[in-house]
Length: 469
Image 1 (cartoon, rainbow, N blue to C red):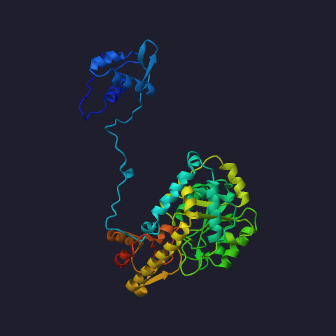
Image 2 (spheres, rainbow, N blue to C red):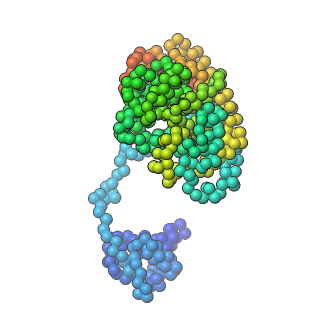
Image 3 (tube, rainbow, N blue to C red):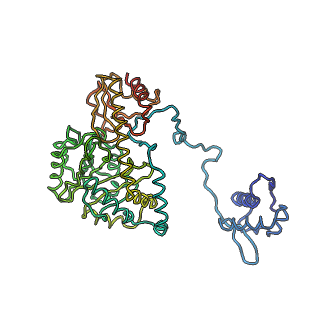
């Protein structure tokens, strides 16, 4: 006879679920033998003093999960479910402490991070209007997996936009939309030969550097000079690909002049398998002068792969980036990546209408004015506080500035002091692709001004002074 306690209190678990779990436990512990017939629904209902419906629902669930089987007109029987191999009892097992995550208490913190943007001025109502229009106009498309490169209508909109704002020359078919710059570069490099060599800026994007290394590619970090990537050093690397941020080098802020652009374009044109990956990082933000034309706009030989992102202009969580492939590489891409999409189709169609309505251009213009005001205020406060002990590379572009401080503090002390002051900052060490630091009498920081409130800038500078000195 099968019998166990059923809690029928008001706050108790559903009766059918209690029956199901009790029988599961007995089957797994082999307290009911394999092949043994279970009581009829009516009999078990009488034994447990519950309704037949509760027992019937429990049996159906056990049947669906494979704990029991049924023979027509004979009833329900226990399935041979096997035995678990359990080397550690559940009582002894403890989740590794180093894998536990702690909620981050940001109360009282101020951020001079280059990562975040200012969401206080994002036009959420306008974006929601675009999203609602996308839902209304594209119900059918939203119910399907989109084109592997993103919906054609969205790519047409992006193609027209970058032609107008960045001078980029492309057909919509050349655009590949994805959830970030790293996935795009990973796909691009994965379809190349394994023995290719890639040159990257140093300091630069450490994550891209590690990504390339993880693909077993030979990666050469190339130092910078006052024109951007050091061309003489780069040529010695005998690389096949070059990854650069010419419009606003990250993190130093150098804008690559036309002379250096022509040098690297000519380098690429000299061999059929040489390519330049132009990461047009935060190029939308330029203060005082017109935007710098893209490197791709100067390319006469289809050697530049242009990569753009909406992470800084919209919200980073939207995860919308894109690359523009030369026709030769597009053919390779279609052969290898033509059967799936990682994109959020709703976000892409919302972006499509956000751009077409003119709201995106208005937002960029508004944010340029807003960020420039904060940037000037921050620089002025830094000079007032640090006076001659500070050097600011004042490039009127982007969402961060590059600063050097004369101090005897070590980088470890700076990081520790920043924690105590509740100030989020990033040192140059985060962006170095090796551990070499030429000057040990100064500290170099990458200071972002996008996310901090204007009324908090003075306080942040005071904290930074205590961190440095």
